[in-house]
Length: 79
Image (cartoon, rainbow, N blue to C red; front, side):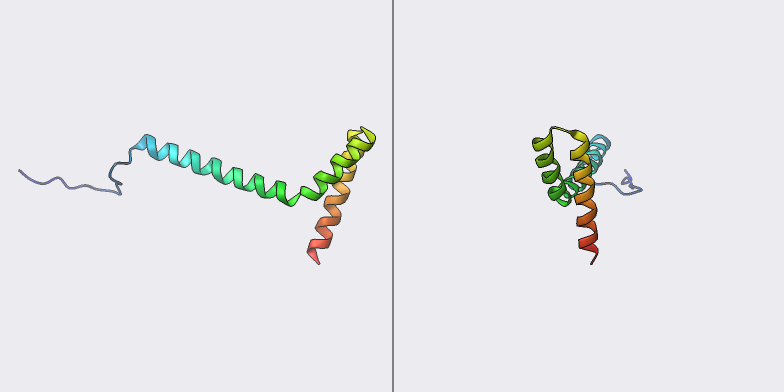
């Protein structure tokens, strides 16, 4: 009886379905980390927009405050 020769890269105990699930979970994890870093980066503009919204109850003014504070934060960080 001849021994079987395996060709290609095979991880023992890792089937195709498990590999697909691993890749999907890895992609979801990367997206979650990127979203979390964006929220942390924009925490000051978010707080400013929420304060303006509570004071005026206007989404327009809150949006303008968010954009203005985000631009100011971007300019200050570039220096």
